[in-house]
Image (cartoon, rainbow, N blue to C red; front, side, top):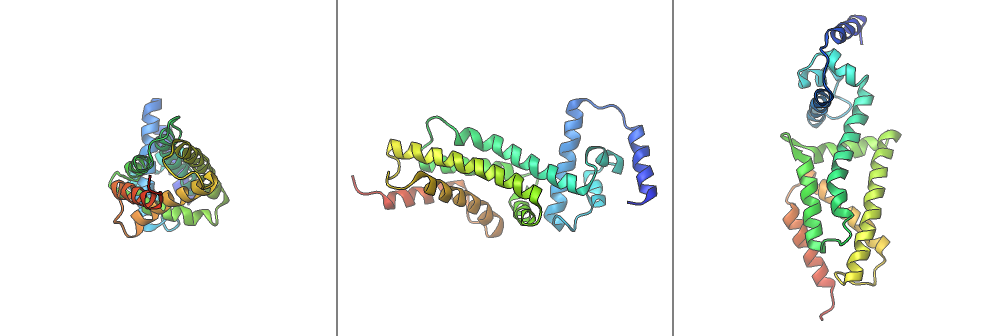
Length: 218
């Protein structure tokens, strides 16, 4: 950042009107949406802060007031994505009486789609970039790993519920099945981003067909 740009940012900040908490949150969301748009077009690292500023249709001072650097903005964008997705998924994952397998898969994948397909964006594509970023960025990796561990633990609990209720065969270890289920949902994101042809109803029918084909006749 040049000295001129630095002083322009400071000058912009001194002229900014006071905002309410709701207005500040709306401004943060505006910046994050702009960030995802830029990442989806150019990738995480090729995208510059200047591009994000233009996409957000704000002054540089307004953006830097909330996020001091691109690294801080990357972490904030990822953390916000993860938190909002968890808010959608955990009520489904942690029900005391788990939904039947096919219904569970349909509702969980619907929640994923509602979160990733919005604002004219396909955040599934951006998530592939984020997973790649995690391989060289320990902070990003920990954000993702922590969320996935929570999902895996919740899925193991769901599997136990299914087995106790007789929805699936009791012979498999819940931990093994829960891990496989997590791979299924991560694969749903990958397939959606790479080749399409998958949606919540298709995923539910696939799981239903898989379970019925493995169940002994009653």
